[in-house]
Length: 551
Image 1 (tube, helix red, strand yellow):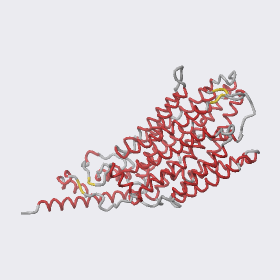
Image 2 (spheres, rainbow, N blue to C red):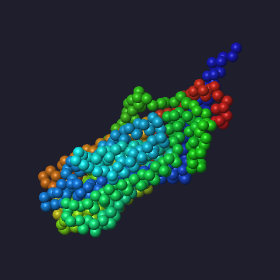
Image 3 (tube, rainbow, N blue to C red):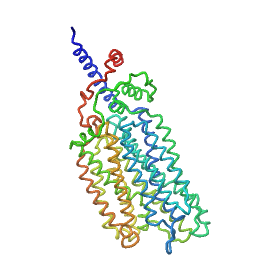
Image 4 (cartoon, helix red, strand yellow):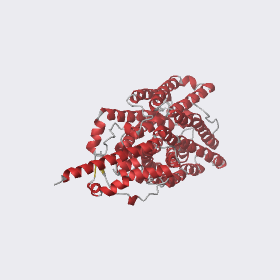
């Protein structure tokens, strides 16, 4: 009699061999694909979303000043403004929500899929932005409290966008252009920041006559329209991003390594890359699961319990934490710093001073954005796939350490003259440049590349959440320390503290390997040959159909 078990085992081994080969062939096709219309669509869908994120985060930098003029407390001999706790609340609410969203959506994306969530978080952002523009207060609740709640809610969606966008862009990218694709998407953050300031500038110019016509600084009703317009317009790019994201398919790597359906993933990848669209009849492809490593708590602990993986998570998480202390500590308070150094401080009084201050602050922020933020992103774009991620991140942290030491130590001398103030602004622009031609960009790129597929979004979410923890620490610390010794008197020491954190970022970067020109699977520290260890019983029962499909 024939040995049925031996025959079944041989067939199962053959199917395993073919499926494993099919998986590796599909991954090779993805890694070697040329830049196509499909890749452009992915970048558009991701970039518009990130533009929206940055707009909604940084518009509060100037909108908080407008809100203070309307609902704040009038200072002796000065203009109305939010008190310290109110200003902190509206600025820190979004980073807190973002931290929660990064952890939650990062984990969910590795469980239910990238595609299913890559639109839900944009809807959260749009609803949160629109609700802020319609916020109102009454006797029982202050409008600032309402804004804090809605900015936290919006932050949940923004937080979800970080791991989802980074992971999706990475998993669709070819190896040789992966750094530029992710950086190109992330660079939309700079344009979102710029657009937020530009809208505030345009709104200020448009309402100039109405501001000047107000009876006094205690009745600045025109400002109530201005901040609502500035924040509410953030809904528009969000709606556009939602449309684009609904047209992007699930990543083949998720289908292949988490849903464990190699055949379906191969078909999806082939059609998406070759045609730029996904029209295949997914129901016609045999539903099956292969036997390959799957996510679980014990597997998570085992994977990151290995020092080669654990040190990478530590490196990406702390690097992002250190960088965001500076990026958000300064980014959400650049208006305060510009006023502190007297850059463009108005000499007028009354409603004219309100207009002049808003005009000068928006112009100053436009200069910071154009002269430092945006060029930094594109410097990284040019060199990230040739020089590499790790050298750029090291260079950025070292440069920022030096710049913040100089700005902090020489603060009093620099701000004592007009030439010195201009020099300070130049150094400030340089710091913005080296944040983006450095760790601000690479801390977004590296986590999306360096973890295995089943934990890629989770690892990115954890790293990003540590970054937002840094943003929260920076914002709370800035608001509590900036006026120690007098109004804005502690600014030079804050800059020196930032220098310390930039220095520590150098050492966390040393924990990271270089990722350029390596496939995502090579970076995962998992053996790829034999990654598929077998096939389900259903596949073995339908062996003939499967084999025909694969051939």
